[in-house]
Image 1 (cartoon, one colour):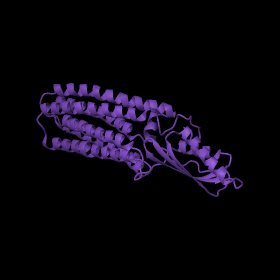
Image 2: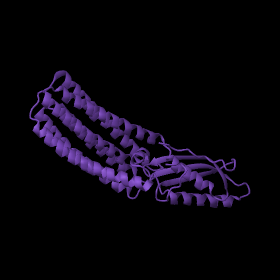
Image 3: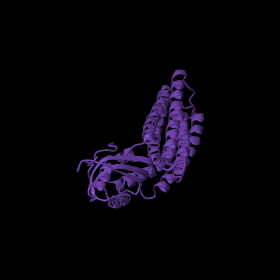
Length: 333
């Protein structure tokens, strides 16, 4: 994807149609599925004595609590701006999403690795395997349903942006759908690992395989938690918009008739759907103050028409060199 390619007015990497409702639905479905699956896995794990099944139960429980955090993030992040928080509460979404990522690491990865090591060192009494296989199969169907919904949302948004789903997941500030997508993907892989561990244990009579599967599930959760935590930490610090959007904003500002250059352009994600734009603009020396004011209003209208997620636009008249614009800024992921 070339950085300088123009974007269609509806193809903003910062927004999509009905993003909040779609994300809320995705989170609720994922949470309900994970809660039911956690109970079923725990029962199967207790009956079979499988460490991998108990780890999978902890995995699903951690995912359920994570969905609660993500739901809180969606609700609290959309509160309107006030005098205490003039730029709104969008960044609170990233706070709760970061907490969710940390909980996945502590509650899911930590428990699974610990339980796996315990099984390898001390062994375990194995019971009936049949119920574990049944629960794994049912869980795979339930997790797959949740994953397909998240996948549809990702594919739909990536088509609107005109980019691949993988690039969408790297660029999107909607950390809720990103979390659900990665967690459901990890859940499906975890179920396969648990099933493999059970099968190898049943075939060989050696419970080490079950412990190894539990550790593998924990490491998988650790990777997912690290990816999500890194993304949310970057957004909390104040991440810029994607480079393609940055260059389009610079081009729009520079195309205004009374503008000679845009020497400095700064952007920041204020929330999953809110963007701040601040720029130093070199206006022509022969224009009046009234013309600068009119041009500034025109610039704001242009930018908001192209990128509805842009909430604030601040332009600072400054001296520059004609034609020297701040391009290739922003995030290039």
